[in-house]
Structure formats: C-alpha cells, structure tokens
Length: 553
Image 1 (tube, rainbow, N blue to C red):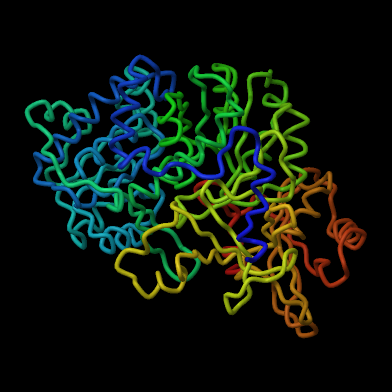
Image 2 (image 1 turned 120 degrees about the vertical axis):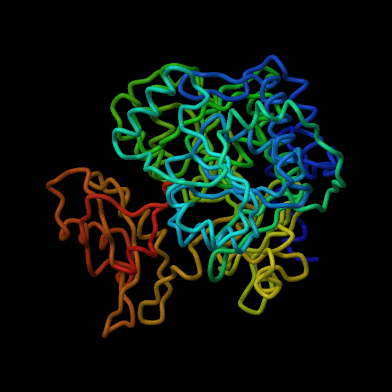
C-alpha cells in the first residue's frame, strides 16, 4: 500500500466532513433541482440589480421554458448553448434546458465569431440563448452551424423599469449592435409561449452527459468536457459537505456571485451547490467593476463570496471595500488560479475571514481539493475532497515519494466522462480512471497538496526548473506592486531566463529596486533578468492572468 492510498489527508478533515459522500443520494441533477425548488419555494434564489426571483418562480419559469424548447422540435440529448453574463435569465434557461433533457453548452459571451463557430460546430449545437449584445457575432457564423432555434434576451429584460434604462444606456454606448437573426424569439416571449405545451418524459440516468463544458484542457485546442449527472451531483455533494460545518445554520445565506455562471467554478459552486441548500446568489454582471461589488456588500449582509486571486486583490486595494463592515462574512472561496499568500494574509486582516483556496479543473467538475475553512494552510491547495484520491506521479505515471515534485493526478466520481468526440485526447489525460492535470505539485506528509506550477509554464534556466508562481508570489509581496506575471524568455547564456510584467501600485517603483528585492528573496537563477511595467495585465473572463498572451507579445 502506498502513502497516497493510505489517504493521510483524512486525519486533517474538519469535524463533520465525511471521508466519503453518498453519490446515490440523487440519481440526476433534475432530481435534486426538483427537490430544492419545492423545499425552498418561498426563499429568494437569485438577485440581480436589486430584482429578486424566488425558488417557486424559478421552478415555474424554468418548466415553461423547458416546454417551449420541446415545442420547437428539440429533444433529449440535443445541445443548447447558453451565452450570457450573470443575469436572471441564465438560471431559468439552465434549469429549463436540463428539465427538457438537453445538453447545456456554456459559452463565454466575449468569444470571437471564430471561437463561437468552433464550439458550436464541435458540439453540434441546435439552439442558443444569447444576450443581444453578442447576437451580431452569432449572425456572422450561424450559417456554419446547425443552430435553428435562437432565443435572444437583453441584460435588463427581467428587471423592470431599471432594466429598460440599462438596455437604453447600453444601446447608446454602442454595446448592443444591430443584428438580423431569422425567426429569433425574445426570452420572456418564449416563457409565455411555454404555457401551451408540456414536457415529455425522457430517459435520464446517472451516467448521462448533461453538460459540455469547453476548456483548453491539459493539452491542445478547446475541447468539450463531458460532465454527467453523476459528476455534477458528486461535486455538489462534496462542496456541500465542506461548507456545512462552516455555515452552521439552516437559514438561507447571501452568496456573492461575481464570477460568471457559464464558468465551471461558479457553475458548480455558486449555481448548483447553493441551490441545493436554498441559498441566495447575488449576481454581479461585471466583476471588474469593483464599485458594483462594493454596492452589493453595502446592500446585503454577504455571508459567502467566491472569486479569483486578482479579484480579491483588487477589492483589497479599494478604499470603500476596506472600510466596509465585514462581520457577516463566513466563507471566502478562491479558485480558478493560485491564491497568493500575501493576498490571503491581507484578506484575513481586512475582513476577519479566511480566504480559502480550492483547486480543480473543468475536467473534475471542477473541485478536487479545498483547504479547511477555519484552518487553511496558506500556499497549499488543501486536502482532497470527500470520495476523492490525489497523488503525485513522475513522467512515467509512477508515484513519487512524499514531498517530491511530479504531476498531480485526481481520481473520484467528479472526474469527467471524457472529451466529446475526442477519444485520443481523453486517453491522454485519463488513464485507469486517474485524471492527469498537467499541474506540477507535491504532497506533504499530512496530506496537504501544493501546486508548484503548470507543466507548460515551467521555465528552464540552465537546467534548473523555475516555477512562475514562486517568482510571482515573491514579487507580489513588494509594497509597491499591484499585480505581477512571470514568464520565460530565450537566453543565449541559460537557454531561458525569467521576465516579469508588473503593474505598479506606487509610481516611484523602478526595475532595479524590484530586481534587488528578488535577489534578497530568491536563488540567483530565479531572479528576473527583465522587468516590464504595464498599465494592466491580460486576463481571462474570470480574471485569471494570461501568461500565454504575455509570451505571444
């Protein structure tokens, strides 16, 4: 028996968190949706721009939407793309699509027409719900796809007079370009039309794929991770088990949702897991507008918030946020990218709440490990969640001794079925049930795991491995630095050397000052040879810093 199979992390589980979850508690996502929407009927499910939708209304409208989809000739197993930011229409469309037996293809609204065409043709999408801000792009490529059902909506469609004002302002600013899409129908019109139709029964099962979640994955171009009922039920139950001891009440919690629901982190953690316990998600359309986040903190007692490192860091540098009363905040969950130690430390100082780092991939639905809520070990990704095994292997797939570096692998009920129509790519990352993550990490003797870096981001300096996360963590501690990203660049002397891109907090910061600071805190070969100052770093839709774009520059 290996040290990994002995599951040393179980000794550090908080009281009340089980070693294993019962994956048979619900057979399908529709089963738990049905139960939660009725059980919490009179609670508020989602809030957007001050407008609320209760669970019983979510139940009613999603059923009507499902019936409308069926009336348009769609049948169980067909794919539907959801392409909109965090607005009330998203959860209605999501639950309605699932209740109709469709497979949901979550789509980033900021995709270019080329990216849209790839995703829609690869997945075989037949229907789409799209915010009209992005419909002009759909018009450019719809002829290349099998899409024949188009449902459009506006940002403000479901929030009354305030919504009409928002839509008018967006139009005046040129953010709702004109489009022509034959036979498209408005979102509320679709719901209304659903009253004339019913939802036929369809074969549902634990292993049925219900989501195609697109990802760059561990290799190659964007691929559709096939997530099943069992995958998502398991991850929902795993998250629920972790959070319950920290919540310690059956009352509804206010959950800030700044990350987009079409992203796997918010999709499973905010949407599914919070619905399961009848909590309220407060939706934020644009998380980069820190002022809008502050308004939500002022308006509601926020008990739980999710986010990425750059978002937490931005809030900590906002004077209005720092001045708020944070006494209601119980849980702060960071994921999507490494949470830097100095950010987590400062967050605890400002809010009194531990910033808890979790870890996972789209391919693991996504959560694989999380730090204990009240006893996090900063700089680690915590402990594998219930019913989950993790291990570190070498390039031949053999387990390495505890404390040594290698690739992190995951085994558990939340691991995807595979990539849609890509058996070879699936076989590359799933071997004997173990998901190869492409992340380099270590396991400490007591079961805490630590990510050192991505395989592909590693910098090789004179034969020595340099991990960008380590360099970024050190540079990020400098009091004059707001944000930093590290990459490798070619070097005649050493093959590669380290270059950092820095956003200043203090205009007086000079490159020599930073390099000297690094010399005091890093081994010589890890010290950056070049420093470039930028006004901002390129980021993904959820705020993850894109080193790839910096390398391409």
